Length: 130
Image (cartoon, rainbow, N blue to C red; front, top):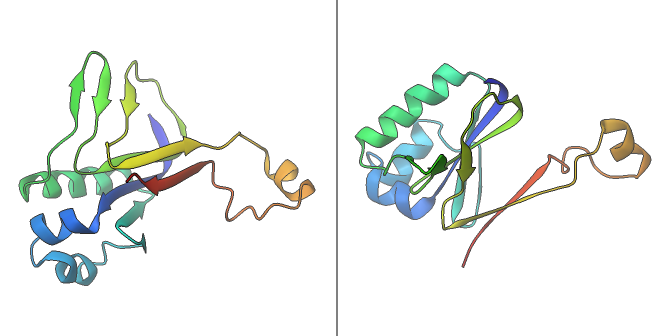
């Protein structure tokens, strides 16, 4: 896989219960690039950094993804890779608490021609399931 932009989503409740020093520890470690209500997001452009982070989260008690029937099932966190070429045979399924809806793909020229804000049009919309 060649990736350019990797994001990890989790909930503040999971961070409070499993991350060392809870939400304060998460913020002090600069793990929140953006949070919205119950969700928090950490983003990196270095796959090795994300792998190291995921290993740390699992060691703290976050439930790891599980491969079942050629599908990767996420539980305590969800990984999203934006702008990638995936050579994997596996399909991913999001966490039960995260609703991920893909937006229609558009080129930057089309986004500008339609008057859309290309910073808001990132290809995927995430929200917390209730």
